Image (cartoon, rainbow, N blue to C red; front, side, top):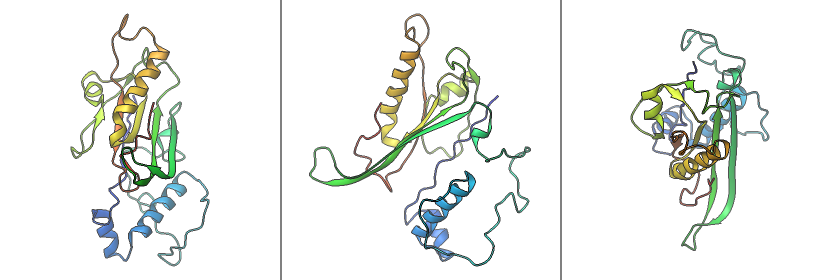
Length: 215
């Protein structure tokens, strides 16, 4: 069985809880963003392409929870502490970065900072070789199409897609088209599919009114 935990990035606006908590410790919002980037780069052993000017402490870096003896769950982490440590699990991503993009039906220019992530849990044909799946609702905020089916039937039959909130419909259509290309018999000789598409609000850094994430 596979257990996939989807933990979205916290809301990173000046009035958000993480920003307020950081401010009480002398951190401004740019400092928090830098720390998030540093943490992700360290976890996945990715060298940073630019230097950061923020220096928040002297001496040795702060310990991680695991280094301090705080563990989550019963089992040790994999090499990278990532879902790709599980055999055959693959993660693909496309990022849209563009400046001075015109907002539809407007003379206003804005920017794109968005993308799509695809989690492919195995090399097998998912539609004909379902994986055991499940889910739970942590705080009731956020949507994931297809989650009800996965919780009711207990299986996964499509890759898992993640995108921004206002792109869920287009990404949903895209994965259906992909599955139809792989399985032309869908909806005729066999049943229909309900893809899993999760979302997060990236409006704090992206112009969500521009439909950049398309099939």
